[in-house]
Length: 100
Image (cartoon, rainbow, N blue to C red; front, side, top):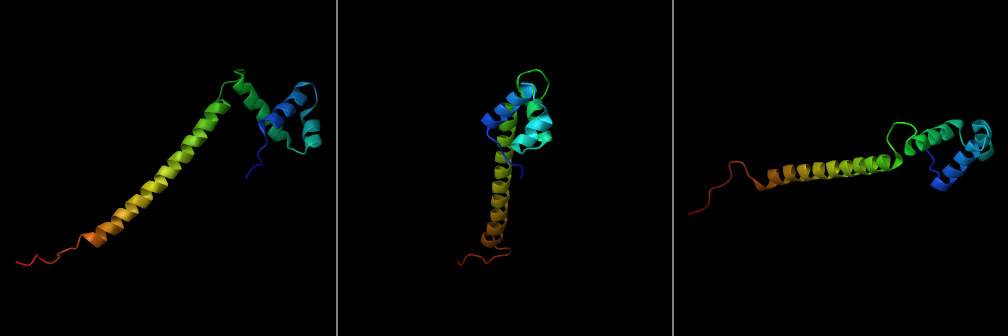
């Protein structure tokens, strides 16, 4: 799983790059990959409207929606399985007739 960095750290990294320092230099100094900084910079450009794409708030909403969908699908699978099991137990096939 990728390591998560706080937004303040990301902002400071992008400020260092914006001040003229090279991405490779900042990456080595802080122990992060060059690619991570490029991804953060691209997302910042999207968030500020300088590039087309999905902004950070939309991405977080989408991630939350996907997580909720997965939870609901798992819950539905459990309910379906329970209904199958209960259906087998409670509905006898060719069961006995009530006594007169």
